Image (tube, rainbow, N blue to C red):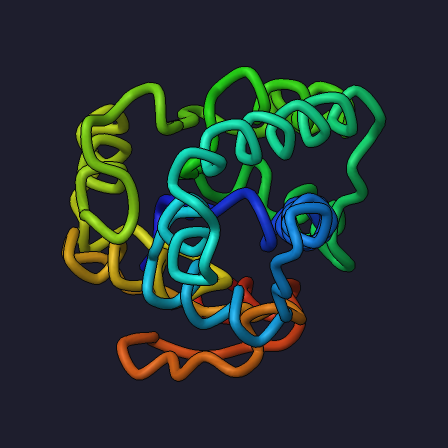
Length: 213
């Protein structure tokens, strides 16, 4: 039986992954770089390359990389001041599982961005633990974020289910010894989730994996 569900944040709970991509694509275009959803989904969300590396591989002058990334980050933070929509079914499944299992979030985003989204959506109180990029030295696909969440919750990994939208996150959970259900979004639909316990296209189906009546 599963006692704890650990959720990814961007692209799973929130549509922020799509927003982040669109702003990255917009800024890249201003620097004459063509960034497609397929390329971003493969190189950033599957291969776990960083934005800076993607920019360099697309041919941007190394001296221009940092100014471009700073501009993208500025626009993203500005956009987060407005509510970012939850993905379909998320509020329903979180409210359904609250009180039945313990829940947490494991994300590669900085804490201040995550807190903005959670407070705006009114879901912050549903999670016992939130592990962000600020809490670890190695982010996904390294297992450190999930290992830290499990340690903070003092729970047997066998009783934990991770839920991810990308191969990068799936690798992190798997390396931490956790079962993981994949719920891909429009940017990760082409990923091959070979390590996943299951693949669902509706986040509400996660409840089927918990072993609760």
